[in-house]
Each structure stands twice: as C-alpha cells, then as structure tokens.
Length: 112
Length: 113
Image 1 (cartoon, rainbow over the protein chains, first blue to last red):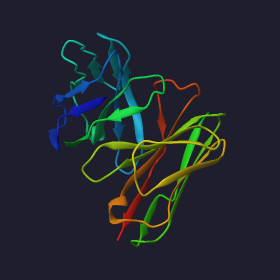
Image 2: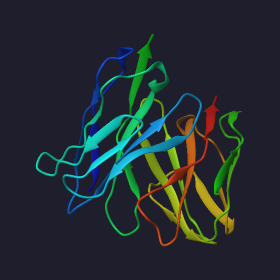
Image 3: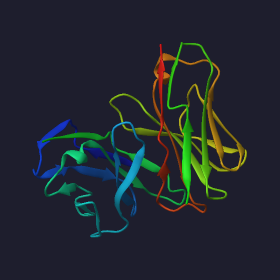
C-alpha cells in the first residue's frame, strides 16, 4: 500500500536559517507528491506539489524535488521567517480516486 | 470562487454523547468530499469520501458514520462518542472527476471527556 514517512519534529530554528524536512514514500507506480502546511488554528493549505519524477515544486520560497530513485520529496527553504512557523505534511496520491496518504507532520517553530 | 465551511470550530462532548459535524462547499457543483481526522501526535487519516449524494465510502472501521444529504453538504456523525474520537476533523473537497488537489476547510477540534 501507499505510505509516507517524514522527519519527526519538533524543529526549532532561528530566522534566516535553512530548513529541511525529509520525506520518503512507498508506493507503486508514479504517485503525485505534495507538501501541505497548517498554520496555527487553521486547516491545511497546499504548499507545493510535483506530479512526475525530477519535477520541482516551489512556492513561497519553499522547494521540493521529486526523486524517484530515492523515493523522496524533501522540503527546503533557504531563509525561514517567523511566519513560516507551522505544521508541514508530506502527502501522496496514487490512483484514479486521488485519495491522499499523509505523513505524521512536522512542527516547525521559527524564533526571531 | 470556491469556499469550504466547517462547524462548529470547537466542540467538547462527554463520552457516550452523539456527534454531528457539518461541512459545506460553495461555488462548485458535484464535488468529491472527504473527511479526515488528525489525532494528537499523528498524521491525517482519511475516514470517508463521497463522489455524490448518498454515496459514501468508508476507509477505516470505526465508531463514526458519514452522510451526504445534498450535493455540497457532508456530515460526520456518531451515536455514542468514545474517548478515542478526540481529534481535529478536517473536511476537504476536490473537483469531479477528481484531480490530485484537495482543498481543506478550517477544521473542527473535538474533545471527548
């Protein structure tokens, strides 16, 4: 079956630090991969996605590259801000019904 | 534009009491609808999804049920809540036929005491 494993948190960083959140997946075929973000008190928002191998998704300074050879989709940002404090979820969809399988989430706190 | 609403935003219920959470979507027709639960310290788990009125698929056996009485209304229910039902419940929608993007509501935080 499909599964997503992501780096456990919590992660605490200073402003302007480099952020990496690791995500690996297990799936047959060619899943689509996603990063969702959940800001405090809110629902999930799609941050970025990639639908095929070697695609790079990017948004708001965040990037992630679909690596089929390592079954990974690591999230990176070069210089984080306090407003990036949130819970980040890696997810995949694989199949015609497009149901999502999520990782456990990584809580990121950025301090000024 | 499309919007998705959930209510209530927070709920505290005693064990054994009934539950009804509501989700509505505006600005689209015949969406696919989803209920997820986020338990403390865990990721999101898909509970139910629906491709149309009265069509519900359950992903995991549990104490909960779902109904879709109208095209853009999705309800999550329980007759008797358990402590383990506590969590953050999220409704989501996607266009139909579904694409790989789902749009999430603000969520309902349920505490069962």
